Length: 80
Image (cartoon, rainbow, N blue to C red; front, side, top):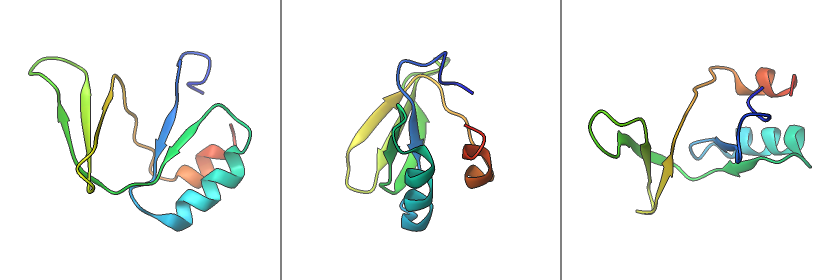
């Protein structure tokens, strides 16, 4: 798991309330932030730079140094 390597962990659920609730229940009490807002775009902050800008449907943005996609998050988080 990434927890020993990361200062902060954010799980993006892209507006899916069902997934947000299920993941929240599994990760309750752990050092994880669950971001449930809908994502409208992902882009690099600068060319040839790893930092990623996450843009939400409310116009807000968040910058991430590293992102991973998990195809079946509910199954993956049970192993945390």
